[in-house]
Picture 1 (cartoon, rainbow, N blue to C red):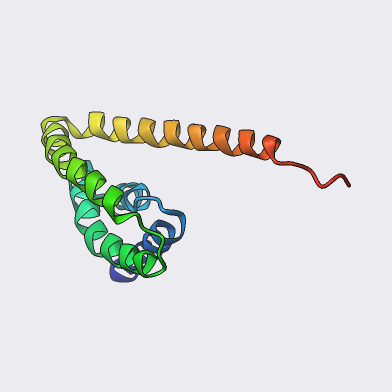
Picture 2 (cartoon, rainbow, N blue to C red):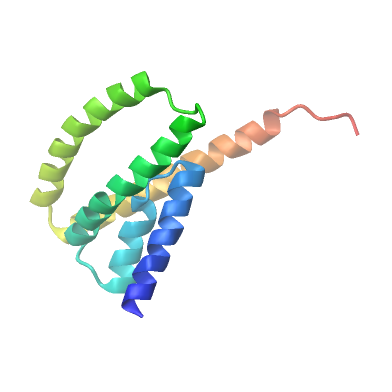
Length: 130
């Protein structure tokens, strides 16, 4: 069951990452912590390692379709490397419960922001007059 469960989580995370542009970590980390009793640090580290091949494949497919601004991607990637080094050091210095709460708050804040933007955009769409 564990192997099948991990593969299913990978399938869901990969599909969401590739189709919605979300980081697989929003699926991997909570799933590993809650379903497989991973420690927070271990879940985050595992999630980051798994995202590498997933992101590379999805970026290649989107790139072939002409939907990647490679100049912007490279600049973001440079910042991401530095941010990744700093963020990993910060995460490793925090106790697991603090890190878990920070992750949960981040997810809630991002969900609220996305919901507000979606709601605002829906109210601004022109009607067809019917």
